[in-house]
Length: 157
Image 1 (cartoon, rainbow, N blue to C red):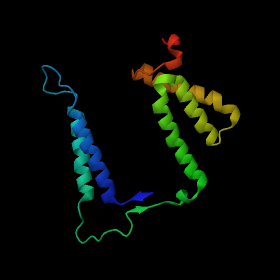
Image 2 (image 1 turned 90 degrees about the horizontal axis):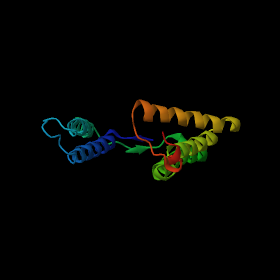
Image 3 (image 1 turned 180 degrees about the vertical axis):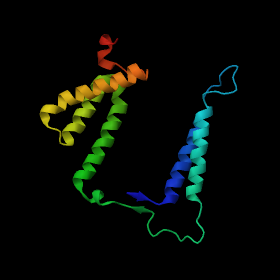
């Protein structure tokens, strides 16, 4: 799917405005001029400027014939199903990760996607487990991002 530059500019402008607005709710750092909202506001401001540049009318430019153009994959049912499956597993992850925990939820999501995308069935479970463990090490250990344990809370280290 292809969107006209004006539509992309509008989306980027709205997203940048939302980032600037939300960053304004961050609490200030006591005793410092620079707080946690500085960089999100700078990035959001850059997105707003970029969005405005995409929206601006080009000299002599005629309105586009099509604001949205769909690619060929939209007409293939399997491709549409795969697209919906990816979005659905992301929504499932967001809703279930706190209750089930990262290990269980990520394994279920990966196993589902691996199966749907044609990974040999004998490799699905071990591959999902290795990728889940690798993601956990990357986020939990190296990046220090706390991941929910859910059902495995008693095994947390």
